[in-house]
Length: 544
Image (cartoon, rainbow, N blue to C red; front, side, top):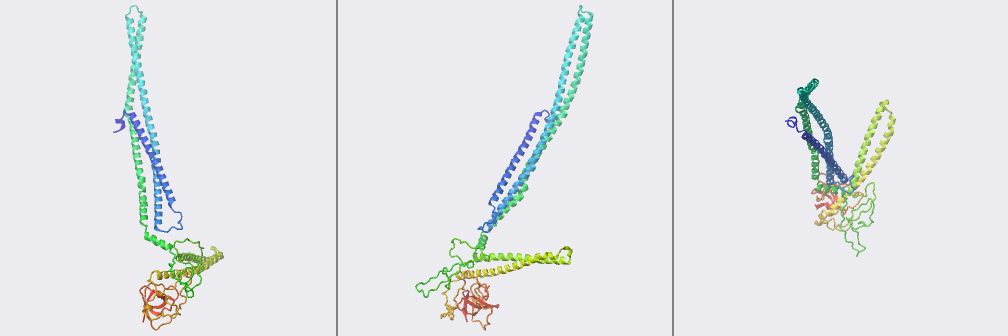
């Protein structure tokens, strides 16, 4: 079914329908344009939101936790999501708004052309109908005039008073009018035949073709409009995989939050390495001559000398919630707690080693280049490389000195950390110590073979903030003993990293080679070989 056959007489209906279709196309284009503006505004607001909450640089006090990393990842995924909304807006603007708006203009021009063609055909038919009406009226008028002239001639012919000349004249006039009526009749018949032909062409050929063209135009418009409807969802489907990845990334970021790991990271980043303060001992001022200073007295060491306070004498703070004091930044990071100092020194040492290796590689490359220049002078002057070689050698020497310096500082920091760990372990992990034994030169029976002294524990003399190795009094070589004087079991693990000490594992059986002489250290021998000193408080001793 087509419009030319079924709607041959509904010109105005077709005109209104095609105009309605174009108006609908324009409304959809306007809707998509406003939808594009909404998407662009939405994407812009999302990007501004991400920019507002995305940290430009890590805050000094913010922990490097996976909570923060997950939040940053979520912000990045939201930013990518905003990018996909912008892509949707761009696709809608290009493939829907611009193309459909252009197509709408083409449809309007085509519709206008078809209706102009139909109106011209109708005007031609109306003009032919007017000519037919004119010829018809002329034929009618000429017939009346011819009949009137014939009646006049007949009347004069019967009138006896009329002259022969009047009768002849009337007959001639009647004959003339009759001839004119015949000509009008022939003209009217020809005009009628022509109009009928034009009318049949107009209703059966010309207008149906125009209506069919309008029908084809309207159907093409509807097809393009349906495709435009599909592009609205297609634009969403194109970005749906990436949006799904963004949402999955948010889920992964949420699942990556690990509270235990964050706690461990906080510990690793901020632990000071200081030992906890010991018990404050009672100082008996009622006997001023025999009063001794306790190891835990604030401000005064156990030997009675004034305590050194400086960048290199870091001590654990007794009051955890005290105010921070302004510290002077030093090159060896001694202003930091021991654990943090060790980490910073390790970082600096690794950085210097990388720079040193880079300079060494550059020196080798310059040497090879110099050899090439010497063998092939046309490639370059060997002497031109001398300044670079000299500069590289100077950098190597400088970096070697810095590496040695940082290695020394690192060894000292590690010794301090180990010392604080041993002190903290002896104070807070093992059972309470018995009263400290008398000094080696006292007359007490600290080395007797009683059961109390066999299982007594001496606390290692570890000082907080100690800078120099604590085992310098130990000899490097030990005299070979004929046989052990007893055996002992390690109660705790000990890492013998200083000169004269030896490592032992918790629960390890050791041979007792020399008893504690009052300094808190006992010489032992391991079954797999090797002798050294370990803290007496770390042992359970049994004499032979």
